[in-house]
Length: 381
Image (cartoon, rainbow, N blue to C red; front, side, top):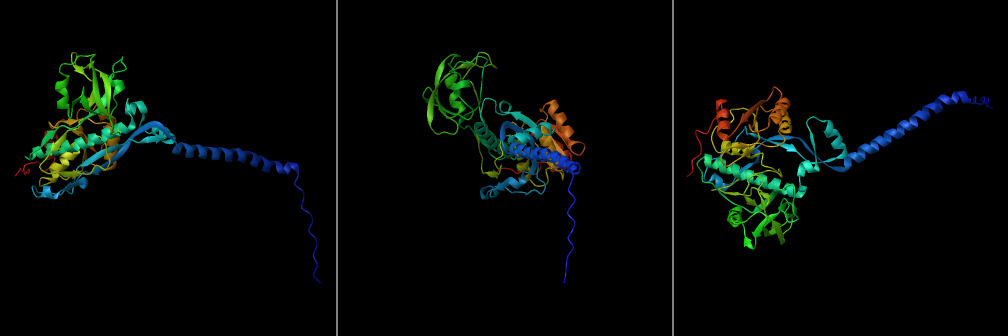
């Protein structure tokens, strides 16, 4: 018959022997609690937006991929699709979370801006509208410059009067434009007289004096309802003796062209791609490679007189250009010395920084590097 021998009872753990385990548990609990609290702080700070905006490196992308020549265009000119299109450069500028603000403040490639630094006296919505309007205008000017360069007919017509910014003096009355108008507002009449364009407004201001009060008919940003606002005129702080309403108009000109070339901007705001658009159009409308086989990135506004204007976020754009593997980065010579120094530091020795004042200088430089130039430019029919 099977039988078993009872095991001896376990030896009880003495108080002295239990203390090391208790000490381990005593230290583990605070560490675990701290870790959970830290994780909670990170999760919350990564999801809560604060009133700071970043200027960070964006991308450098071929403009040619964004060009579409319509059937109407191809009936009048020949397109020469490019395998080596110029790169246009962007910077990212979204609102930041608390965590992104902390990380951005220690990242040398990111500039953290306060609400005031970012929008001034405006608001995000109106500034976004003005940014998109600026991009639209930059496309129009790029087409105008490229078309006229190639002998094609192009002309400007004025658009609506939209407030880009207001002029604020040190002391302002309650009726000043600084307090009565906002960026994004559209002005449609002054003292009951319609003002479809700036050309209609200018003669109506000829006999006005600083201190006069006028009634402006305004369509506020993001509304469709017109309303009258009384505004007291001021003397221009830049031109003594000249009477102004007290606002800076957005460039809303439209270009009249013999045909359209669509440029997809994919919700990109601002005018800084105008120079790139111009070069891309010239390259696609002429035989050969305007860039001589080089991977070329450019940034800068394009003016109708073919001069190239300065832009913002140059150091951040230089980071994007280097990441894209470009050989050259052509930028406006009018950028500040500090911006150019920061761009050179970001580019290092692998990307050549080239400074130009106008389109002629840029084309001559590219041709000297082996580019095809505009010798065989399209001529209007």
